[in-house]
Length: 330
Image 1 (tube, helix red, strand yellow):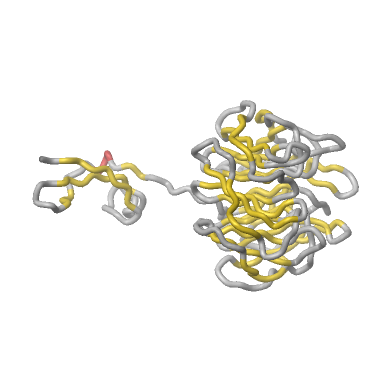
Image 2 (image 1 turned 90 degrees about the horizontal axis):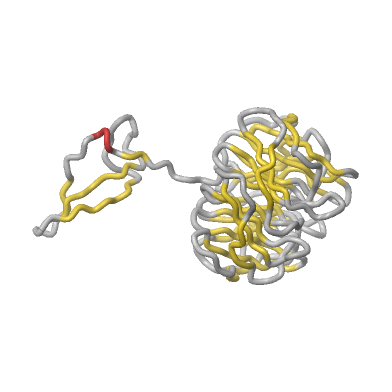
C-alpha cells in the first residue's frame, strides 16, 4: 500500500531559488514503516510565504485628535530616528479609530468626529495618496481595538456597542459581518494579532485580556489580565507575544503576555514618558508608540525592544501633535 502525504516544511528540499523555505512537498509512506522522499518536479513545488504581523520598513499613524480632528496619515522609517512625513489623508477627519495592516495596505475602521463613525478606509503603503472608502462596519462606534489576520481586519468592541466583534476582507470592499462578541463590554482597549487568534487587552479601567479565533464565529474567552488595570493602552505583536503599553492615568508600564498560555502579563519595562491613547506600530524587532496624551497632546515616537526587557527610548516625532490615532506597519 502506498500513501501520499502533503507536508509543509520550513526547512525542506531546496529548489527553484527558494532555499528550502516554506516548500510544499510530498512524501511516500510505504509498508516498511518508513517515510521516503518522492521524486517531485521542481516546477510543481509551492512556496508558502509565512504570514507575520510585524513590518520591516515603516510605521504609519492615521487620524487622531489634538484640539481638532485630523485626517493626516504620517509615515516614519523603522530604520532611522527622524520626524515622520505626511503620507496622505483619510477620507474623514476622526479619532479613536482602529488600525489594521495587510502586506500591502493600511486600514482604519470606525472612530468619531463629534459622533461615532462606521467607515473603513484603505490606503496604499507604497504611494502617498488619499485613502479610499473600503466599506462600513456593521455598527458605528469608536474606541475600537484593531486586529489583523493574514487576509482580514477585525474590529473589536468600541463605544457604544462594546461587545460587537466585526470582521471584513482586506481584498474586497464590503460591509463588515458580525464575528461574535467580546467576553465583556469592552472599549478603550488595544488589539494584538497572532497567526490564528486575535487578542484585546485593557478595558475601560480594567486589565482583562480577551482571545478570539479568526476561523470561527464565537464569543471571545478570557485570556488573563494585565499587570496593572488600565484602559486606552497601545498594542504590539510578535509571533508569540502580545504587548500592551501605556494607558489611562498616564501609565508608563509596558506589559507582555504569551499568546499560548492564559496568565497574568508581566512588566517588560517603561515608556520614556507616561501617556495614553497612543498609536501602536510593530516592526519585527521593536514596538513603537506614536503620539498620545500626557495630560497634554504629544508628538513623541517611542521605541522598545521585543527581545530584551528594557525601557523605551525616544525615536523621533510625528509631523502633527495628536492622540487617539490608529497605527499600521509595513
